[in-house]
Length: 378
Image 1 (cartoon, helix red, strand yellow):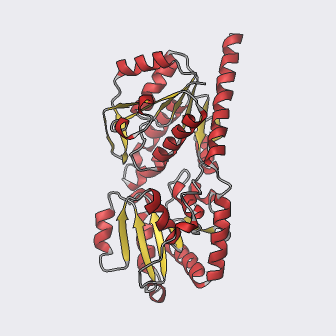
Image 2: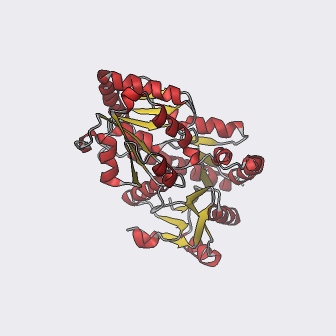
Image 3: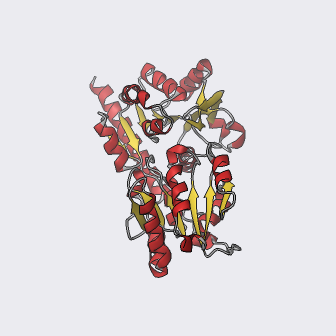
């Protein structure tokens, strides 16, 4: 099996899709599976497997600047594909590099699979672009219609696409590194506040920062004076929120990764994540692996990660009151919080990247086998 991957997002970009694909590339290396990866610029110097990675000039996507739109060099790309001779093409984004992969997959009759990672239609409402929704979905349905399978990270996302008329949609769930994200990474707090609540993610409108801001402000005074907030991440609302909470116990760390991020998760009492736009929510699973119960929205893929009243709380979407009630309950009942923490860690231990990636490779083999069978029958 020889695999060509096309993506408009990859490390060092900072999002769940980029990190997942990087882990998958590492898995392909460990399994000895030949692959090539077509990505936006600024990758080759930073990856140990750079000989397999081909980067092209790119520019930021306006809805999501961390995702870059590449301008592929068609001649070089075609030459590399023809030399490599892939058995299967996996396209992970519906933008420029993805379109190029789609074109060559059709031209050379190579079986293709795709993956759908981001609800860009949900983002439109936060940027006052809802008028583009119908046009976006027409394009997305056309783009994904050429794939033997479209992989999604959650049942919620699968249902969303099926309702939009997509076909051949299958799950490709997400895992977590339980050795990196571990309760033992906890650091002793030097804060005078008794409890630490954290948010990890992009500091942007589509992550429902409006709800998070209200939660921080509307916490009862008696509780608020014992709580420190840590906001991990970067984005267009960062400077605005720093100014807004300048005189309150809210720390903005910017983007963190690796051991630094693991320490923040493990040192927190609760993880607060109000986003309603997630297809999955890797950060939620990382929090659970760290033994930190998560309080999340009942919309999007996150509700499939958190089991209500077992590993955290699932709250009414966009309701600060619902989130505040959940926070209050777990702060006031430390034994319950500790029990949730243990159960969160136990659940995360069942979500192995190794098993998830091997399952994806089995899906690849099935698609390739069925395609070869069709060729022989033709």
